Amino acid sequence: MKIYFKPEGGFGYFPGLNKPLELNSETLPAEEANHLRSLVHEARFFNLPNQSAAPPRGADMKQYTIKVEDKDQEHWVQFTDTEVNPTLQNLLNYLNNKRKNGGIR
Amino acid sequence: MCQQHQHRHSLFCILPPYILSSIAEHGNVDQRKMALKALVGDPTFRSLRLGPRLSSDVNRKIPSAFLVAGEKQRTIFTANYSQNLPGTIVRTEGSPDSGDIAVDEAYNYLGATYDFFWKIFNRNSIDDEGMPLNGTVHFGQDYANAFWDGQRMVFGDGDNELFNRFTISIDVIAHELTHGVTEDETQLLYSSQSGALNESISDVFGSLVKQYTLNQTAAEADWLIGAGLFTDKVQGTNGRAAALRSMKEPGTAYDDPVLGKDPQPAHMNDFVNTFEDNGGVHINSGIPNRAFYLTAINLGGYAWEKAGRIWYETLLDSRLKPNAKFQRFAELTVENAKRFGGEEAVRNAWAQVGILPYNESIDFSI
Image (cartoon, rainbow over all chains, first blue to last red; front, side, top):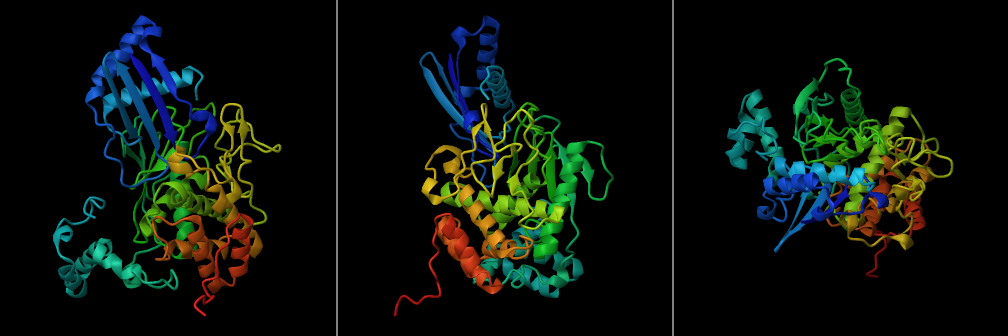
């Protein structure tokens, strides 16, 4: 399973903080790879709409793009900070932490 | 309307405008208040405001006799480090300090912003109708951002590595509240040049609230947005601590190995064409930001008195359309400056950032 994750937007634009994260489950420790697979599965990622109903109003929100490739499937979703799907939030929290701990800000 | 104002009586959400008008005219005191509130949110009533506005002091949405204005209504929530909004109420209007610094900063700075708009522009809250001010703090985990979601202002605690809590800077809180004002008045599209204008307007009034609070003239102000928001680990420029943006010198707020260099241009020659950041809304806002700074310096004194007034009148000008570009906004600031004797100061400021507003008073048909 390959994952591409890119956060954008927010109160300011910082060139160094907009680098994408790319993960390949085959290069992760087995336990973490399983955890990542379960997060994707619990979020029913491949059944999610590409874009949530975009908030008609607002400013300075962050926007997140996640793309997952798994076997013969490929799917992407885009959402903002007001996303209320808790399982998608769990996946987002994992990816945010992964970026941070991986030295990608 | 009914979805945005949950407190509104359901009856007033289904009555046609002509019946509401009748209630507003003939009902008892409470009925008239409710009907007027419903009417001002009605698009047919709002359309009456579309004519050219001579001043923000006229053409108000509600007759002043019905206003209970100047009284703010703040409620601060905590998201308890989740991303669920609005969260749990932790402080309401008139209650004492909570002891939670983020809660109390949000409460105090939202109050200061309300007071600024009321005292300087006679504006009664975000919608000029006394809209309650709702803020949510402790949003998310290590969340380094603040935003306006169309109903409330939301603040993260920062990651404490690069960013401190987002309630720390009064101009950041005022910036978010101003997004609500802009949304209420012009709905500037949050993309490309109109989005950069939207961002710039929030920076302008964010900075003015800070200057007003500190009683600083235009010459005394630092014109920085988000001073204190970065931790000491982030590198500034020219021996100065890092900030988010500089209205005086766009592009110089920070230069850091992790964050990169402040990407804001100060002149149209350096305008950034990009798909990132909603078409560069936080990047190209540096150009109108500097135009405002130069206007304020040209006019002298307190920036909110003339320069701020001109920008505010422009924000309320019905000729400012949601897809406005810098050129049109500049022209409207010049038009609005005429009433305040600031036309040349404004025209000169825009020229210095590479925008030449044409003179609407010249009759080209001759």
